[in-house]
Structures are given as C-alpha cells and as structure tokens.
Length: 276
Length: 212
Image 1 (cartoon, rainbow over the protein chains, first blue to last red):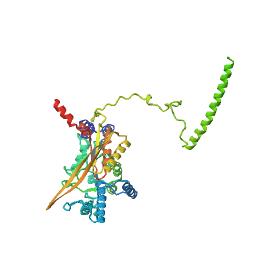
Image 2: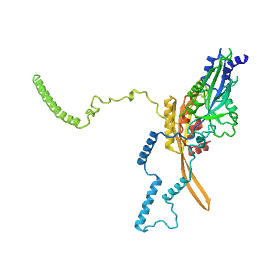
Image 3: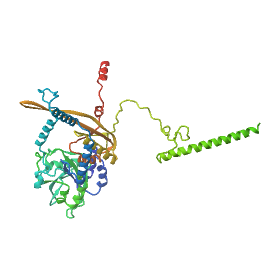
Image 4: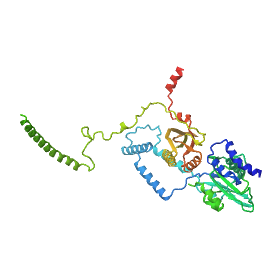
C-alpha cells in the first residue's frame, strides 16, 4: 500500500529530478492520471536495427530512372577523360593513314592511352564482388539473426512471463520510483541484452503507451492494471557478440509482428512504427 | 475689327479642326495596321512619358525605406536551448557524400520535408568541396601509381524551433530516407561552424599580429 502511494508522487518527483529536461508532454500527462487509480508502470524498449540497403525500386520508378539517365546522357557534355580518348583515337587513325609520317612522341616514352586506363578499370571492376542482398539468414528464415531482411527495420522481441503466461513482448521492466521512464527502458534493454549495447535513444518522450487492466481475479483496489510506455532506440553497431541473451529472442520486421504479438498490443505498437 | 477677328479665328479653328481630323484619319489606319500585324495581346498604347498613364506601375515609393546594406559579417543568432518551451536552437543537418547529385537531391528533400512540417529553415548552404587524391603505390617489382580523384561534397540545412517531442520523429524519418552513400550528421550550430564557412585572410592576420 505504501509502495503504491509512493508510486504516485514518484513520477512527478522524477520529472523534477531528471537531469535531462527535454521531456515535454509526458510530465503534463502524468498529472492528470496520477491521483486515485493506481497503475503499475512499465518501460519497454523497442530496439530497431535500421536497414542497411535501400529497398528495390518499383517498376515505374525503374523505368523513370532509366529514362532520366538516358536524357541526361544525351544532354551532357564530354568529360575530360572522354575528350582525351576521342583525341587519341583521332591521332591513332591519322597515324595509320599517314603511315607514321609525323611521329611526335619519342619511342622511349611510354604513353598511357585513355583506352588502356579504361581496360585497367574494367579489369578492376571484374575483380570486385558485391555482397549478396539476400543473405543466408533470409534463405533459412532464421529469425534470430540480424543479417536477415537487410532492406527493412528489424525489431527485438523477447519472451517474457506476465502473470502466469509466457508472451512474446518488447522487452519491458517495471518502473521504480525515482528514475525516469527512459532509464527504465534502458534498464530493460540492459537486462535482456547485457550492458555493452550501442543503442541510441533520440528523445526523452515515449513513443506509445499500452494500458491494460488485470483480470478480475488479480485486480485489487490499489492494483487495477498496468501501463506500458514504449521507447525507441536505434542499434548503432550490428555487433552483438558481447550481448548475453538470456531468454528467447527474435528479430522481426513490422509485417511479421502479427505472428507473435497479441492484437491489442499489436495495435498500439503499430501506431508508432515507421516502415518506409 | 473685333468682329472680324472671331471670324478669322473661327476660320482658323475650322481649318485647324479639319487638319486635325485629316491627321487623325491618316494616323488611325496606320496604328490599326500595326495592331493587326502584331499579337492580339500587345497593347498599342505605350506608357510613355507624354501619356497620362506614365508611371502607372510604380510602387517602390510606397514601401518603407530599407536600411542600406553594410558589408559586415552577420552575427549569428542563438536561441535558448534549455528552456521552458523545450525547444532546440539552431540545428545543423550536415550531409556529406562523394556523389554531388545525390547529396543535393537529399538536401532538397530534407528542406522540403521541414517546410512541410512547418519547421523553420534558416539557411540551406553548401560547404566548399574537398578534393582528395588517392594514390596507390604497388610495390611488386615495378612501382605503379594509380591515381584517383575523389571530391567530397557537403550540404547543410539549418533549422530552428524544433520542439523536443517532434525532433526524434523528424530524425527517424530523415534516417529512414537516407540514401546509400550519404553520411548524415545532425548537430547544434556553434560559432565554430559559422567560422568554417568564412575564408581566412592571412595578410590581415599578419598585419594584426604586427600591430599587437
């Protein structure tokens, strides 16, 4: 009971004590919801891996791009290299016709022709191999690896025990009085992935909220339900070798979320997910 | 005499009038020919100095007087960053790439996006291009030197008045739409950034050093 009442004044105190003062919006929000109904607060972290490749173009986009390229090519002037190449071709032709009459260059000097340069560059290009866009993880549909679906956002889902159910959720941890919700979310991330995660949270404001009431069996006067606040973080490095993942985890895209999350939860989460 | 004069005058007036009419009749056909020959929208009446419509389009005298422009360095404005409004001050979005068209198009996109979201864009400028020469020294018997010339282009879009609740969303949108090969950097505007745009004048600095 005491803990619950402490929970009310806690958030307000948390706003004042927070060193980062850029938390707009949620401070005001709290004052309206604070007084009679005791809700348990959770901070959840939505960890995103940004796409590494651009998405493939649509058919119209490709046609347009090809057309624009052709127009630009026809409108453009010759570059230095092309001018040099044309001049040298002219010289070669003239020399062949006039049968070595005017041989200005001394035979000792080796002149690198533009054509030779081009051949050299072609050779280099053939030696270059691009990394595959569709990786092995894609083919095996290995949802625990980060190398899958390089052109879309990947999100971390963890299996957690809520009440007596094991559910797939975004990693969440209960809020403790005296800390900001953002640090709660960071703690959630640390508990599931270890301390050495290079993730960047952009702002202090949460992105979404999901609130639910406990089933009537557990519900008491002071413990009506829970509110989960979502924060977004971006993975800076894709090197998770140092991460100690304790429980089951998955990296999924926005479309695949529906396979794992419950409908109400999914609705709230989908509201703040940006999938371009 | 007095009776005769009006007669003379009348006569003269009559002749004058007749002459005017003759001239008028002679003039109008020519003018109408011109009208017919040229565009239908071209008006035959120039706003020449003798016409009553002279100076019909003047408006500059109605505007308030502008102060004369002085060739001095403009001091930059800096807003409060941590305030009750929770707003960011001047923020620079710097985009760097080797490909000039790509980085320019991206800068245009960011500018238009900020306009769309009613985020005030102070300036949108380009930093000078840096040229790097890449020299390969292959030491396998014969030393070959392959040169490549890389130009790095940078475009900066300066915005202000970004609210702290909207900033993460805007950043996420810009990040998701970042093209390949473009490096994005978002930072607050400082005086050092401002000074980087100006060219240093070594002679002036020498003279100043001599003076002090």
